[in-house]
Image 1 (spheres, rainbow, N blue to C red):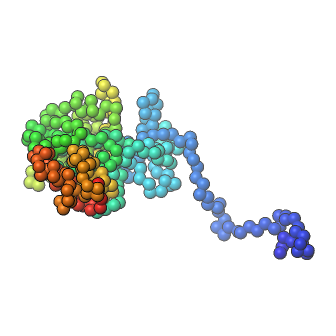
Image 2 (image 1 turned 45 degrees about the horizontal axis):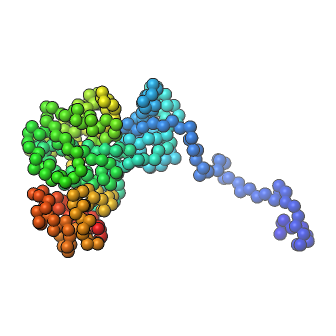
Length: 349
């Protein structure tokens, strides 16, 4: 052995000649997995995302409040950066024209609103981060309101830990009473709005002090409401096709807008209109919880009850058949069972 003397029982001391260094054939610096911590990064809030560029608000609420443009740091990989995210920035954060900084860190999120392509797709798409309210906008007519789409929004909000608010527009065109009967028993604030007179004071009272994500079917008047609440928003407003009854997609991006009122400020995040909202990523236990009135009754169900049509001694089914949930009971039970059947996972008790 090279580290021993001639006498195998007597070791010798090592020196520099004993060090073996493997040559680097590329002649470059060895890679390291240690990344900088960026402890001095500037914190900002993502206002919008556009083709790999992020508009970020820095210094919110201070005399130095400004927007900067940022790109993604390579070290973040493919991690989604979405509207509402709080992020760490390095580089030129002056906001001067032509400057560009980098997003090097995503701060912990308080909430994440997600959806999937369809109910069978478990791959989730993060829509917004850090919202604490969801404003669900539907029209009383033109296009017709879709109860099951609203159910899906409610489930997604509950899964994300976000409080839901329902706003029905175009009530001067049709009476929304039959539609709203589907949500009797839910702890759900409801606001109605005429086409020519949106209830700004009522909405502002609900939105001040919160970050609210606005969602809805194309053509329901969501962007019209946003423009009324935030006049400087200038969000594109579309129309409904008279033949198909479908709205045309107008808002093509998600953007966070500052709501400023005499009673205080808030943030409203406008999202593109959608015609479907997949829940493939949702925990099935949250489906029943979205129907708060049915959930209360379900506490009396036998252990392991699935609440589906063939469930023996299901307290919810018995209550609906007895008429205890009024005229909307059968429709609400059907809606819940359709969603539960889609996910078809055992033991929702």
